[in-house]
Image (cartoon, rainbow, N blue to C red):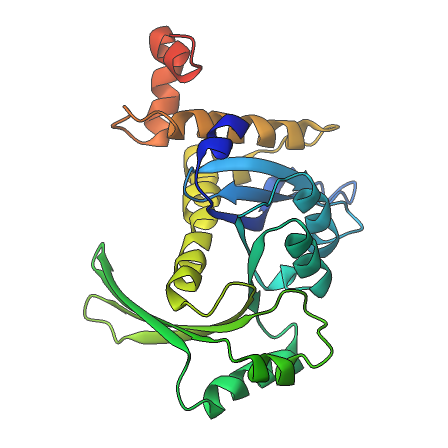
Length: 278
């Protein structure tokens, strides 16, 4: 994995958590295993994972995971849970950039950012895309404000390290004949004012949901795993991700992940091919 990442251009590394739902035990009071993963979106690789301790949450786990990675030149995306000044500082100190989702966990800051876009005559940069897939039509508009005066008003004491731009992504989606729905999301980022890189990073972040978490549930039935003894739940989670990585790196594959797993169990030649031994 390191070899692939080292030869790849700078990309988006998405951080997100997932709970292995049936790994908990109601009789003993043990909580289900919750893991935070780092996902290289372009290479479709799980770079690292960290288990959240029973007495902690993702906020305290993320710094440990970030410390294990080389962030130089990379763009780190994290959902609202990771929108913390300390995490932003760690990313900047690691020579990386961040795109942090801003939601109601910072109500005053969110209100101020909304006001910035409402007051601005026009954003400093705008990027629009239209996509169509599986009967779904989606319009996305990413707007960016990078006026130093606006940033200074929003953060006069410089408490958000590296903050350079405010982002707003408006997505309008229509499925079939249903009425269109619109969602608006706001972001803090250390990227410059160009809206296109921000839009790409925001869109890439969802790859960890679609390309990792969803596949683990559908192809590996991870949420149905009842492994609970000792470190079995965490160890199996590592093995699933290793297997998924090997399958997804097979460029000759023309079948789904679940079918590839089945084929590898039947065909020793294909199994050795996945392992790089043939």
